[in-house]
Image 1 (cartoon, rainbow, N blue to C red):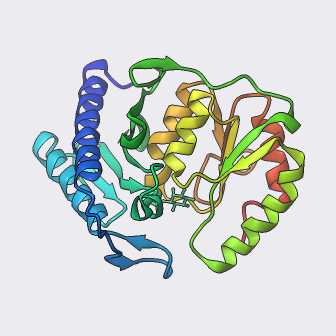
Image 2 (spheres, rainbow, N blue to C red):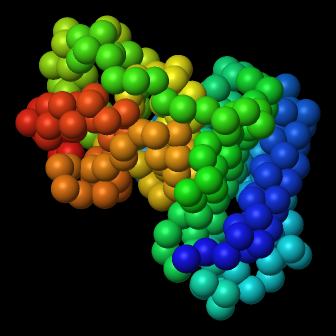
Amino acid sequence: MTDRPLKDELLAVALEAARRAGELLRDGRPADLGVAATKTSSIDVVTEMDIAAEKLITDFLAEERPDDGLLGEEGASTAGSSGVRWVIDPIDGTVNYLYGLPSWSVSIAAELHGEAVVGVVAAPMRGETYHAVLDEGAYAAGERVRCRPAPAFDQALIGTGFGYLTERRAAQAEVVRALLPRVRDIRRAGSAAIDLCDVACGRLDGYYERGLNPWDFAAGALIAREAGARTGGRPGDPLSGELAVAAPPGLFEPLQELLDNLGAWHD
Ligand code: IPD
Ligand code: CA
């Protein structure tokens, strides 16, 4: 399928865009950073830095790859003509960024004819960047990574996240209520892209969430898969906004089945 020089070029461009945006966000965060706007609800916030970082990334991509399409969380949307589309979350974990918590990332994926072929997630406050190229493995800070082998279900450390709408959160709380007594513990770190990379690096056994947008998972899901994890939605479905599940084979299947039975795919 994809020719190697194209994948290499897309990876180099994604790494450089994420590096520049990460540096802007880490070094340029105003001490008095406030909320610039809200989106789906009063707690779904955008800061001036989300907007500035998306502009930096899209300006860079327009220079380097002028014929590609774009989809960005803060509104970037271009069709393009090359078959490549960039899916961009300038800050994944905006609430953490707003509060000065370290768990936020810049997530950039390149799709070729609709399939993710390159994923880069930069987590500047961890000093780490994760990346993957389709069929070429996953890396953290330049080192090849593999997800953990599946533990017994009741020993699994599971990451998750919650949406911004009250009704959805109430349903998500019910799922957590049923899941928590059955696993080692649950983590809610606040950046879906980092959660997926944590599965890739063996820092979480598994991850699930309902309500993600393509920019939250496009890069991280490829990185998790290239590290050996399975990803999906409801049984038989690909990972999507309806439900996202990522875990190594052996944990993925029972986790997906339990989440399906618990109704983690609906509000
Ligand atoms: C959010 C984060 C969070 C997840 C939410 C996402 P944002 O993205 O990934 O971990 O639980 O579903 O919307 O709003 O910080 O870009
Ligand atoms: Ca996001």
